[in-house]
Length: 573
Image (cartoon, rainbow, N blue to C red; front, side, top):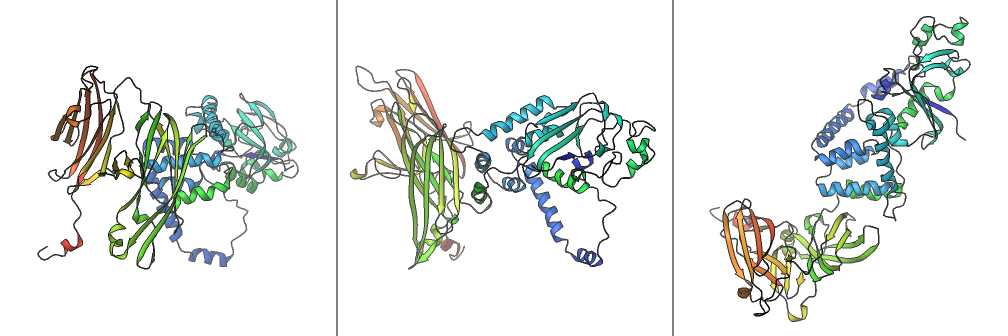
């Protein structure tokens, strides 16, 4: 068994101030010389970093700022906080938060995260039981409860009153303010049988953690009242309480002071008791930190939905990787980057539905490398899935550099009811072209007889066409004519839906040559007449027989094409 400790901290320490005892040995002159000659750059650097992180924290979007400053403020490590503040996108923040809880999950192979559930239960309990003009989670009792959980024993004196001091506090009888003593049989990283003391000196219910066992003494400044045994015998006086150099105002002890109440033990334990609890699974720490702190691969992705049957949906998952983030090796005038890809689709209960893995090779000759390294590599995998809510995990690893990119996303596959007008995702593509007859329905980006490559950032140059792909389902077919009565309106406006209409087209099912229940829109729209800026695309389908209308919308950007190096260097430019 470890030694029994009483850990009681003054409010002074709670704001990060530490008293230096007057009895410390004099500093060696050589040490003073070394200290005086030590560069101040480290301190300046720390101050600059603290200021920079503070600015980043103030600029966080509200939900993530609340998560950092309230939800996990007591349990997040300094390294994790620093890493979180340096993230650039909400997607990265969501990934971080998921990994944060996963690192602490005692049963990572189950859908439940007991640590997370217990943490939020503790916050709720603290708010319910420890509020005192401020939310319970902000109080000292709330903070300790959230970090360490319910104590094994609580000795509560809500009204204060008569108190018989132990020998370590000088003995004798006094009257106290309200106080509580919480005892933990074990505190990981601190020891066994640790007692924390909280005192309400204002009598308002605002208990604070104290390291001074004399702070709860309501009579310590009343002459002749609440004397200790030594004071009653004339061997000590009350003034001796206020000349102690160890941060305590308790009477002098009877006998030796227990090691647990010596000043440096109390200060050391104080620093530990307010530290975030140790992570349950340090073996995950290196992996998670490397994903967040080092220069990981940041890639874009999207998923689309297309009906196969009423209970099966085709889900093309498209991944776009900036080539500039990859590491290329040159051999025989060919530059090669290799990416290992692994992805998993699982249910919310953790059951794996599908996995796929692939190797993506980028190879560019010397003559094209400088141009192509500024572009992107695009990969797609289409999965048939039943309607429902899934989790999608994608992991990329650059074989040459070992850099890793990770995405964890919510995948909500919609149902396609047979009795109402419905539609697939609206895809804006930089490539739409027919495929050979032997490639129909096979390979990346292939939908039926067409190759449709999504442009994930939905930005297009004025010298390239805008590809549009969309499927509508469940048009009613007239019993007599055996044709639908579909009307499709395509509108492009600048600067939002209420902006100036720059493109408009109206077609019927008859004109499209598609008279059945399903109508597919696929076209290439020239952008050369459009000025650079943001545009809004709206495709509205109306079933004139059932009077149902359905709209799909997307926003895209038109940009000037980049000026080539040769053009920049041409005479007269």
